[in-house]
Length: 165
Image 1 (tube, rainbow, N blue to C red):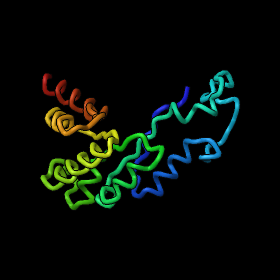
Image 2: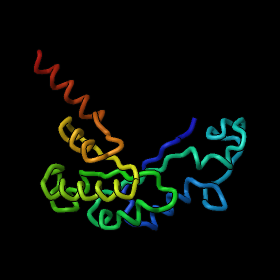
Image 3: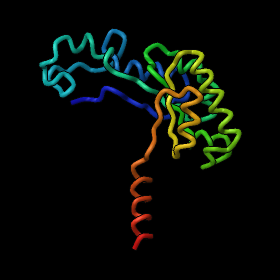
Image 4: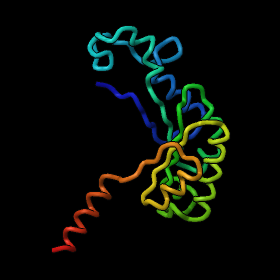
């Protein structure tokens, strides 16, 4: 009936994080528009929706470049940001290692970012394309891990079926 978790890509600076928070918040703190008969309010049936909505929305921002990593503390500590998702693909590219998600320098930057987020007590997430990577990030304190990308799962299943016949 409405999104309760939002993952906003390519947040580069704290100002963008603050704008994201404003966008999911009603006034006076935010700029989200009020409409009484929408799916979010269950067409007007949810009591006190406008007063309680922000407490029920999980706002995650995605940092995907080395410049965003350099701003990570300011982004992560923005009031209203509920967690930070690291995008390793674009991060690797911004570091000069496109597609090399497990390049030692990329992994070092990610580990440092996770240590910072853990120290700030800010939940962190990441995309892991294989089980060893997922386990490594979980051991480093990641709180949520995206695994099993739908398109990859579909193509692997098709490849396996083709090879069987």
